[in-house]
Image (tube, rainbow, N blue to C red; front, side):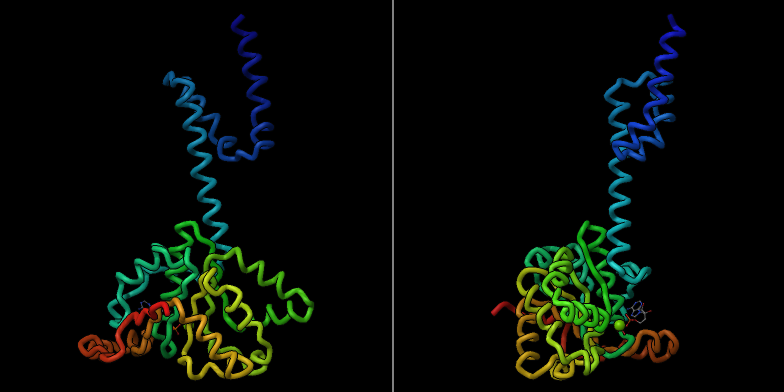
Length: 279
Ligand code: ADP
Ligand code: MG
């Protein structure tokens, strides 16, 4: 009798890996033998055994999903908010950034985030940090150099598939366009960047880093009217971070300079987060 039961159990067990593969439950497939042993040994009720298996599967599924979203985001690794030294940029309020990182409501409303300042002040790091925090919360983010994206959109336009390419970008809750002011003059001859901005306006968020203030963006768009229209849409609902401090790298290399600028904030008149109010 007992032997017959054992034979049946063994046959069941042999089928399990196949069924678990078929159902795409790799974690249960990996763990069930150990958990079944523990369950038998400790006399778990069936509910507990089943619950334990499913909990593990769900947790690992979430971990895999996050890893996939992070890889897809192309965010630079190691540039999280926990690695960002807020003391180095007096004009940026940590509380404000942390609120953005929690996605309060700006992502849902398609509001924007703009960071301005000279090279090396941490614009890319700061926005990447916000991006990483949003990925942690399950949002889809894409980080790209602006000129790379413009190139991609221009190729799409040439092949008459710009709308499809723009639609592909729509699944990202936040696009981080790094170094907008580095778009080259010849790239600016098409309006693809403007079309991207217009397409996402009031629907999906864009974050931008730029060395040059708006006044110099004529280089980036085909003509003045389009520059104005782009700026208008970008700032309509936006948080603007002015990061006019010394280069972080330079200060890190020269502790004496760092000390001096810590006691004398370099931007007394342009305060942080001129959050541009809705018109
Ligand atoms: P930007 O985009 O303004 O040119 P980056 O974000 O590329 O500057 O920063 C330059 C380097 O200095 C990066 O390695 C970045 O991680 C580091 N960095 C800049 N600001 C900070 C900061 N406040 N805390 C920590 N690291 C910083
Ligand atoms: Mg940068």
